[in-house]
Length: 301
Image (cartoon, rainbow, N blue to C red; front, side, top):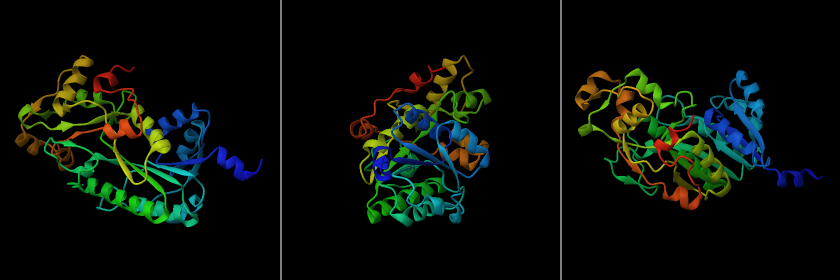
């Protein structure tokens, strides 16, 4: 069979930043008739064996070192970009390095990027859809907004179909660092009802399914809120976790007390309130959530 014919039948997907969500994507695609030839970029040699066991061809490269990314040029038909930005500053040079490498030989036809709903900033509890003007209030949010701008520019400049997934808090009972029981067990306080903020969530499995849906159906230069149907304030969310698993409810404190007890990073999560609309996710990506509420997600083993 001619190589071009083989490539047309089995396109290549490169996953950049293949952590927990990336591995869930690999599991999904591994059961989907092997539509894709799967590659995964990692900066750690210790990750090579787990990625290979998950069905991907591991590629060593570091988004902070452009010289290690040259081999990515012309390699993939589609890219799923799940890597976080740097931990400081207001720009995402990692995404810039990746895009420059991909563009060397024409680039992929499609890129899906997992951003954050923090790009909206504080919306004072208002309902938010993807048409809202971005107003990130933290350096973390500004780095993500910078990455989105770079990706949109590359999509327009090179004719790539770029889809942006704006993701809130990711949880799953089997997700390292994302099991909501951990915070409740630590007894970490939440805000009193009068000071509390709306929070948004997505189960890690549903996020993985949204990534696949965006690879297949995402529109060019289009953003999607990837969240479930829950409408919860943060304290009510952690109360529900505690009640579900027979744990003590977290203590409630005032915002003034929180300012005295919590770090600036912790306070940043308590200073933004918004309710996200997921209608575009359901209508355009045609995603039917497996866990439409947090209560559903907490029922999983």
